[in-house]
Length: 145
Image 1: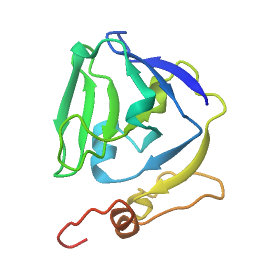
Image 2 (image 1 turned 180 degrees about the horizontal axis):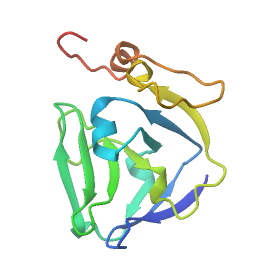
Image 3 (image 1 turned 120 degrees about the vertical axis):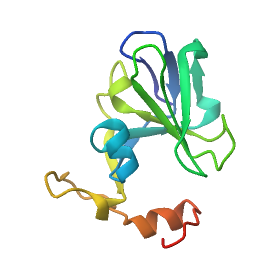
Image 4 (image 1 turned 135 degrees about the horizontal axis):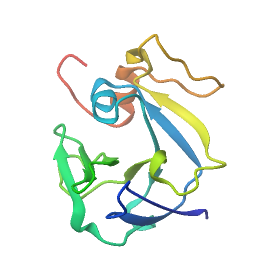
C-alpha cells in the first residue's frame, strides 16, 4: 500500500493518504472553473485518509451529489467528494498537485472527456468516458443527462 503526504500552499492543511496508485482527470465545466483547468486527482478511500488539522478546511456544495473542499486560509483546491448529498461523506479525490511527491502515479482514466476544450489533449491508452457514461457509472441522475 502506497502512503503519501501532502498539503495546501500555506501548510494549514496537511494529510497522509494511503492506497494511491493511479489518477484520473475530469474535464467537466465545474472542475475546470474550480481548478482553473482539468482536475487531476487520485481517489483515496475515507478509511485511508488522515488529516492532521481540519480547522482550515472549507466546503462548497457544488451539486446535489458532490462537494468540493479548499483551504480557507490560502484558497488551495484540496479535493472533490462524491458524497451523494451527505456533508463529510464520500471518498476523497485529492488533487495531485497537493502531494509532496506525485512521482510514479499513472493516468488511468479521463471523465467528461466530451467536455474537454480542444486546446489540450492528454496522451496514452486509457479509458475516456463521456459525460453520459460518467454519470451512469457513478449513479448520478440529472435531467437532460
